[in-house]
Structures are given as C-alpha cells and as structure tokens.
Amino acid sequence: MGDSEEEWLKKGAEVEVSFEDEGFRGSWYTATVLRTVSKKNNKIFVEFHSLMADDRGSKPLREFVNVILVRPVPPRELTRTFKLSEEVDAFHNDGWWEGIVTAILQDSRYSVFFRSSREQIDFPDSDLRLHREWVHGIWVPPLEQQPPPPPPQEQE
Image (tube, rainbow, N blue to C red):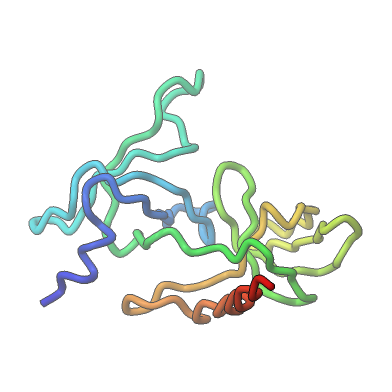
C-alpha cells in the first residue's frame, strides 16, 4: 500500500524539513515539495519558505533532502495556552526550534529555553506551538480535540 504516506509528499504540498547539521538539530523549516520522492535515492526536492540561497535573500533555497527528514506541517491549536515545563516549538531564526517553557509572562508571552543553543528567549504565544513528533503517520502527542461548537440557539 503505502499510498497514504505519499499523500502529504505530493508536488505542491507544504512540509517541514529538519537538518542533521551541527547547530540545526531540533529545528524544522517549512518548504514546498517541487518533486516527489525519487525511488532511486529516497530524496525529495523542496523549496524552502524562509531559507535563502544567497545573501541578498532574493532566491529561496531549493535542495534535495532525504525523505526521512521530512514531515507534514504540524497543526497548530490557535487558542492554546502553554504550561510551565511544556515542550514547545518556537519560531526563531526562520525555523521552528524545540524548546521548553520556563516562565509564563504577561500579555500571552512565554520564556522558552533551548537545550541545543543554551539560550533563553521570550516569545508571544503566536510564535509557539506544542512540540509534536511525526511517528508512523500520526502526531504524538495526538491532536487535542477542539470543543464542539455550542448548539445553535432556537430563534423565538
């Protein structure tokens, strides 16, 4: 079978890519699939949204990446609040970086500590999402169910 996992790797699909390189571990960058998986080398050709190919920033970076470093874009619960010690991804330096909430600040801001860089940085909640892993085609931890909408009010 294996068709369902290919679905999110179709040409034009939005994905996230991680890098093995030192200094990039634990970070994910959004990209668009330009060419689907090559059976020969298991690589996929993508164009990054925020990484540039040149210093002027005029051309998006395009490259072949191993499909094991690619996942769908994780969903975001837009109304979520975060708890102390919760694992989050924070949007920083053009990518999503894995961190941990170390303080809850005013105005929906959070202080996040990054183990990889040993940095602590404050973010608005709009730049955070719950950290999830893509494991055998499902998100872990699983998506939280949004509460059902209230039943429509009967008009008198």
